[in-house]
Image (cartoon, rainbow, N blue to C red; front, side):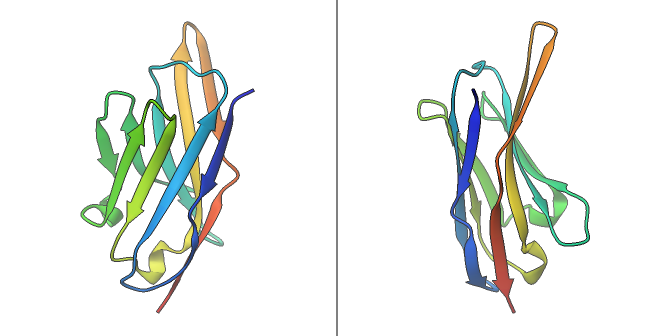
Length: 119
């Protein structure tokens, strides 16, 4: 049973920083893609950042230069360093892991962690 558990969310003032973590447990394929998504009230879930098992990264335009995604493949943990936070960054942040193994697509989600940014 694969589980993803996020942590690190909280309340921060605009301009502040937070570091989110996503711990993965269970048997997963070593070649995979991990991502952070976020969903604000009344809005669709959006992709924030992605990192492959080889370390390639990609970011939404809205967070480029402010957020940094990383991962520790030994500890099966992913991180999102969020700097210069803006009220528009407030949302529930979810981590996602997915991969193809043969013809089977595997897709896992965490339960989410709340990020609140006060202006």
